[in-house]
Every structure is written in structure tokens, then in C-alpha cells.
Length: 179
Image (cartoon, rainbow, N blue to C red; front, side, top):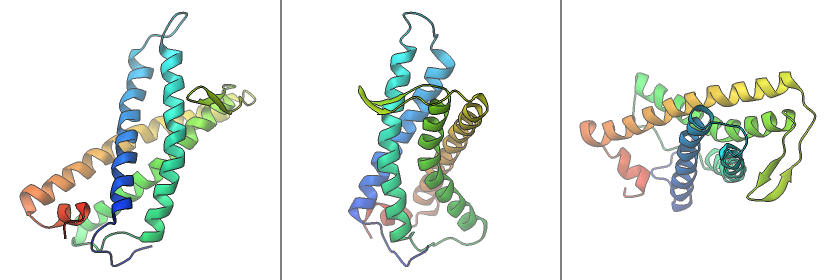
């Protein structure tokens, strides 16, 4: 859905930054937990994974609301043409999809890995049957999207900075509601 929006409303901007910061933090901590923290008895890895799952569920709820709101409200009218407009549109869709795909794939991987998913100490989603193929598929998607979203965030930020410092257009003002 596209719309003739000139600027995003306050709810959209607040939701954008809150979910964006949570997603960035989750990607960074996810890479750290699964690439740098040693597992085993007495390790803090299990506790960190528990927090990772809790924040993932929070993102699932808030992110789904964000995606629904964005689809209902629409996108800002593009001021770009050609490949820049195409790239901006692709990046927005990748980021919106990732907001839902990342937590859903994590929950599915955990479920079919025979592990429960708690929410800050409360029981949220029980462990499911261990089905190796589904667990591996879900975690594979989770891992690929982590890299995809990291790249999309970097491109999104680079694009915003380019508009502000090189093009000197009103893109940042439109995003911050100052138009």
C-alpha cells in the first residue's frame, strides 16, 4: 500500500526508533551469544539466550503492530527516481519483513528444538517435539535474516546520511516530522 504521506506521525516515529533499537541490539547480542560465548556447565550462555528469546517475543508483538500500522498508514511519497527509489523500497520491505520473520523463525526453531520460550521469567511458549529438520530450517532462516537485516540497516542508515549530508534534501526532515 502506498499513500501520499508528507511526514510520518509521532506514533510511527516512536515505534520506528524503539523497534529499530531493539532489532539492532538483538542482532548484535545474537552474534555475540552464538559466536563468542562458550556454552557448557556454569556458562552464562543459557541465561543470555533466555533474555534473547524474551526480547524477541517483545519484538514480535511490538514489531507486528509496527508492520500493521505501516501497511495501514502507507509510506512517504518518494522523492527519488530510478534505482534509488527501487533500493529504498526494497530496503523498507526487507526491514519490515525481518521485524516479523526474525522472532517467528526464532520461536519456531526453539519450539522444534524441544526448548520452551519464556518471557522474562514467565512461561510463554512450551517446548514442542524435537524435529531436527524444522528446527534447522527455522534457525537457518533466522541466521540468514540476521545478516540480511544487518546489511539492510547499514544501507538504510547510509541512505539517510547521504540524503542529509550529500543531497541536502528534506528526507530527514520528513522522517522526523519537521516538514
